[in-house]
Image (cartoon, rainbow, N blue to C red; front, top):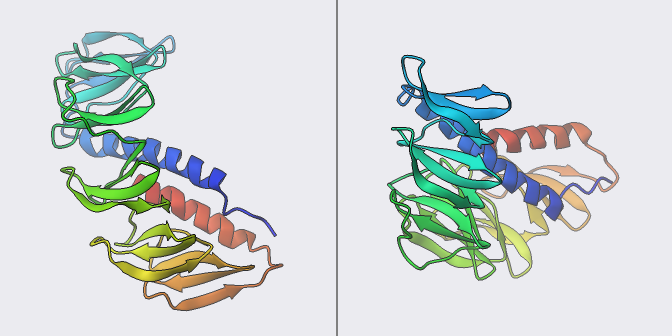
Length: 251
């Protein structure tokens, strides 16, 4: 039986989510901030103004479109931010950088995530091991080896208490507590009791969970809709779930 419920899959899924979320945000913001456009020349990235004149020479290894007034640029594996005048507003010193929202952005430096303001100044002393921003209005974070959730304005509404957690999907998030997986609602209350060995995110009202040597499809009430036997391959179900995870990451 294929063991695709692994930490490796979760790790790369989270990395993919972060990349795909940024890409999705770029597309959403493009129509309102299309006066400056990105271009490529000899493998490098630069920017042009609305008339097609070069505003920033193609000197960066990579660069995003503008989101909320800033573009993330990469050079020598370090990231920073350009403003809409084409100047480097925040120096390229970060290992990871996420888009600005509510005038703050999460950046990774020296192995830790912190939030900066639009001048590149840290807004407080709070540090995180991981930050995962999604479009559902909740930010998943990891601190002191535990996951919690905060709102887009950084109000910690669910304190860090979970050994593992996935992003909210359809108002439920898969969490691990006391060695078992279940689901919480956005108020932090348990919605489906932790009793599974693993639990994926909900998509169209359904989620795949494992318990012992079996897999199940459950609904948002925790009722079992389908059971998979130990020896069944279910390649099509696996394929569909992988595609669903990719689509959720892009939302």
